[in-house]
Image 1 (tube, one colour):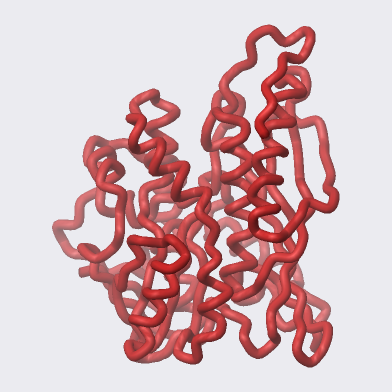
Image 2 (cartoon, rainbow, N blue to C red; image 1 turned 135 degrees about the horizontal axis):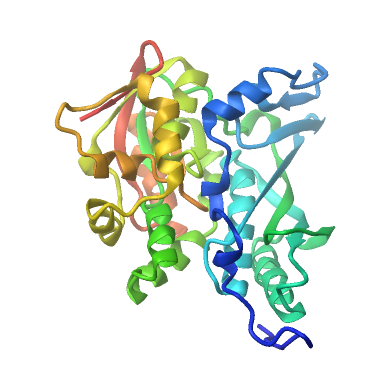
Amino acid sequence: MEIRLTKPGIDEEPRLTSLAHGGGCGCKLAPNVLKDILSMMPLSAGREELLVDAATSDDAAVYQITEDTALIATTDFFMPIVDDAFEFGRIAATNALSDVYAMGGRPIFTLALLGMPVDRLGVSTIHNILSGGRSVCEAAGAPVAGGHSIDSTEPIYGLAAMGLVHPKKILRNVGARDGDVLILGKPLGIGIFSAALKKGILDDESYRCMIQSTTLLNTPGVNLAEIEGVHAATDVTGFGLLGHLLELCRGSGVVASIDEAAVPIFPTARELAEEGVRTGASGRNWESVVEAIDAPVDWRRSQRDLLCDPQTSGGLLVSCTPDCAETVLEVFFRHGHCVAAIIGRVAQGAPRIMIA
């Protein structure tokens, strides 16, 4: 139940999004900047039990506990993408849990990460953020078991999430094979929606679609890990479709071909992109991938912005054999991901993305 109270001394609070310089996964460091930072430090101690670390830009770390059990550990947090405190909490929690699902795991518990400007936000607002996150975690079977909070100049919320997976059924963004098809589970356009919301030009129906998509858990990942023909997976978040797909290509040593017309995109987001609505992160994302992209000569800026649009709580991107594609799509549909679609293929070759 959402509780709305007023903290003594704070008569009228500012909009959540007005307190942050960015929002959602658009807050991420640009991929090339992050790569430069990580190149300066070792990634792990080389322990054989540590099955997955940051070396391949996977969505989470994985540590083997027993012969048939491994622990998935991940964390994700960001600044508000919407002004409704409860919905902000729901979105941030759904996004954080996505990394567990993207590895094929089942979440088991979470820890809350909270940074709030307590001199500008009331207790009830902060409570509602936490309540929104808790509601998602409980629905996912991953209760909030604790956490940490600080007083910060911008509102920040997210989770550290833990999950379990069989060591031989881990989904990674390495392993895509020649001839695989690519399937995307959610439509693109969340970053553009968030930019329009900040400008006050997002219509009610598009806002509803935005909330529905960003709070839809990526639960298909648990079932996808059981399908033998699924070779690789990741979730599409702050780096946009092209950024996360390029990570998959580099990790797998393949080239990807994208049928742009087949990529699910929110219709209103496409219209807004054509009107020039975009996030600052889309430009940074493009600069990080441009040297590995082959696009049509007449490719428009709006098309580029959509494929580089930072997705908050975006969909799973799966590489699988053509023979099991129908089964993969059925899994997505069964979990409520109704617009999941085949968007391209992969082949042997130097890591690149070709757009048609």
